[in-house]
Image (cartoon, rainbow, N blue to C red; front, side):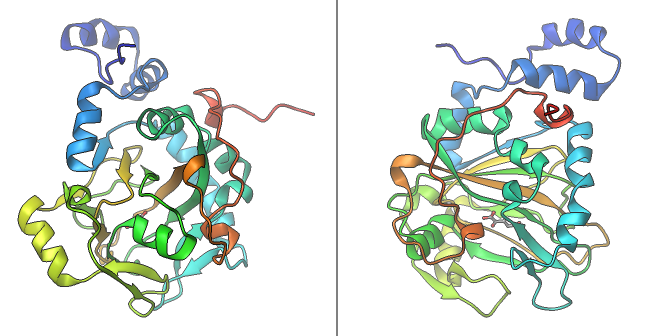
Length: 296
Ligand SMILES: O=C(O)CCC(=O)C(=O)O
């Protein structure tokens, strides 16, 4: 089946633009008809280990997500993990079980369909969070690749899970963007150690020597873009992010989907760190974030 292009060709763009009043109306309509990854994007994902998809979610959708965050961050729950210094929320987890809008977001076709194209048709919801990285207070995420934690802590057999992000703020060089090491996923798993002291979130991290070698080969790509930009990256891709010393917040939604056939076999971490419902996720309608719940 031929993949639909993510962006219209230039000639089509002129006609398309004439039909709609605003840029956000245009991008909403575009995504409704174009949520499939192209072959070029799949090749890029294989080569680099990640994709950056500008404008995948509209300003209205991002606003709807942002609107429910203050109440969630104010909840007294161990699923709100606070920064080591200062106590700002660092990451707020298990959100699809705590809030209806996130219950829809984890089933959004603009996340689920590309993930299925890459990782197969039967994916379960492994982890759901917003990494807050608050202005001035947001601390680093050390160099790591997700599979080290998924494998060592949860016994996930293979590095097949995908991490799907949505920027909830504009992300620039200044407010703690993710740094990807392109191609690092193809170099085999780098040695890791369990870091329980650098931040409040225990993580299997890659030491400086191997990181320096990987960066000598692949360089660093900062994942920056406007709010509504999405990222997709694989389980073996080395990445990290610096502290946010800017006056600008940097919230990012993250959904990890994992093939059902590759589910965890160790159950030592709390549910909010690795969900144990292995039912394959089914996508909802494209406008699900902006529609009211059906009345009973
Ligand atoms: O939010 C960040 O800056 C880091 C996120 C990350 O490393 C991850 O989702 O695996």
